[in-house]
Image (cartoon, rainbow, N blue to C red; front, side, top):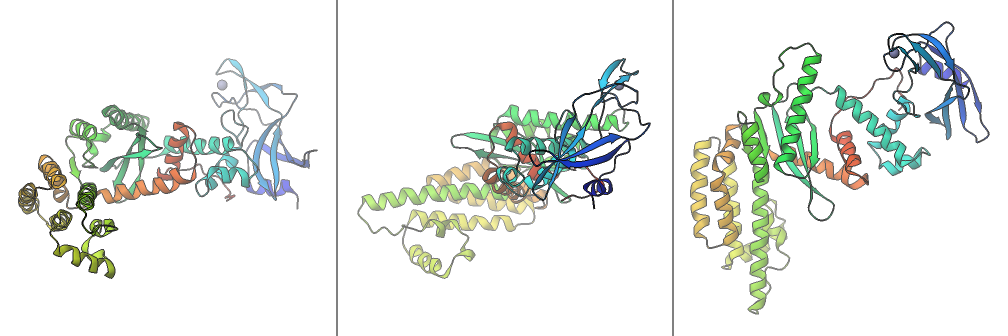
Length: 431
Ligand SMILES: [Zn+2]
């Protein structure tokens, strides 16, 4: 069977045929593509057919999916079209490659497919190509996806930040967290008011454009459709959400709040361990960090024994731990009113505890009381756990294995991994 036969079966073009295949002197397979008889070239700018103005003397090569370790190129003598509509002579449009690329669209999709599963460098090595070509391929797929993705039906979003690289480099991420669709909607540099404002504006504009193209004269607002927003207590986010999504229920959720408890526990324990050491007492708090961070029911038998010993001692760390554990009951309430009463009582106790990190938490809970109680008003449906799951995925896929070099590459990788983007469809699945 000839290569041309396989290609003709898997990859059909209306106006072109695969003509012949051969090896070149470097061991690459070249497949020449020819226009069908009597087919006219199409203008690459406007798409209308015109007569051939001239044909290039040298062929152009387009990289195709390699087979059995051989690189494959489609070879075509490009024609120029006298386009009546454009009133100019323009290079022809070819169905296997959009834009000025020397990679065929199918090859770009092929590389991008593997780039979702493997580090980009690994993909480049496996298919004897370069990191830049893999990046260009992912970029093509992502751009296509962003252009073709649907933005309707978004009712719940989560806003969060991710710290990346050493130092204080942050990214702001906006996720859709609806039950039927969880994905990355947008991401941008920094975590300022401007970042989030820009993100929301960009999404809104894109949505309206799409509705106008779909024939709506006065399109609805994407932001007005959002009923729930989850975020942490970062001031810039609180400000922007309060202003631009003021009809949505803003939820300060369980996950982010318990994160503060974890940090407070660390502070209390470290300070007390230091004090005991200075006073020359037994280092009873050594290696207990996880005992205090875990929930009581998640402790191992050994940790349990250790804890029951510690609880007998009059330690600040233990009192802080008991306050933290007691606060877990807060999440078990069903109604916001009762949860609110519990919250107030708990805060009073914490303020009397004389443990500063716990008092800080009480102050923070008091000042965000309403937003926290929104978690109950939203019937506990949306929570930071969902956002956290997406962040975790980001960490596992984008951060660990893709070695981004620029912000642009990082952005592309993030949308590729978490955007749930639609992909171009081909008649045959090569992968
Ligand atoms: Zn034209």
